[in-house]
Image (cartoon, rainbow, N blue to C red):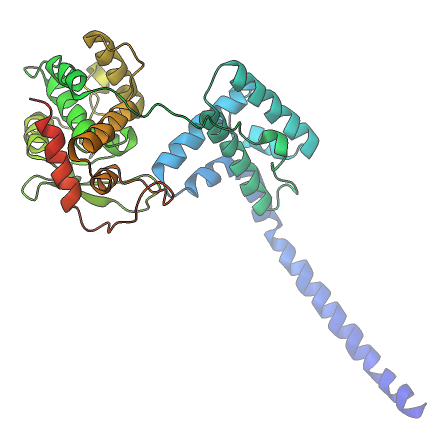
Length: 343
């Protein structure tokens, strides 16, 4: 008992220590003002976009989130995003489910609907990781529709592609630019985002190569270009280097006051759509359909699936063979073959 009583002599020291800690905690409240500013100025929408390494993913998220909040008659900004993630999960799921049904009624493809829902799901997941909500959008009712097993990837024949080239007026600046774009879409089977993201510095005509940011890639990769593509790029560059702009983009808008801006991927879509109608193609065309046309033509012309796979640079290991990203001999060869199919 005596020893226990003696131990009570530490009580005063413990009380003094506790009071010291309380004082330290009170001192930490000096961050209250900074925390208030952080809470007030925080924009998790912008933070989520900045967290995306791929500019293509960032653009897709911006477009799809703008679509979602627009469906709810709201702008997409920090206030509306915080309000949305502050909802209870059943309420949020109900909003997204209603949007999904709206997209289905509009006749959008299953893959497009899935991509749009993924954008909202990613936003909520980001907010959850930051501790701003305690739920995620993993409800089975929000899963995308099962895509059809068959997809028309045949595109059109080289004869139709030739007619599209013939429609371009190479005596105009726009014709020279669009000719170079169509050449890259055809001979290299590029995606439209890969085309618009090319900078002047990414073009090396002496080495007959360009550098592109491929789908799902974090860094640009080198791909070979054909003789005709070199000629098409030379013709466009003779115009491009005379245009004084702040953008490093290879392809710029030539419409009036917007001449200094990087060409948008929307322009490529409508350019191909319009050009295909002008030459009489009866199926809906797009830059991706040109890509399909090139891959199909490569398979038919070479009979070599490995070469066609190298041309496509497809990332899905289930459908494409693994190849060395630094070896482009097969891709260069098949690009030349594609050029030989048109005049």
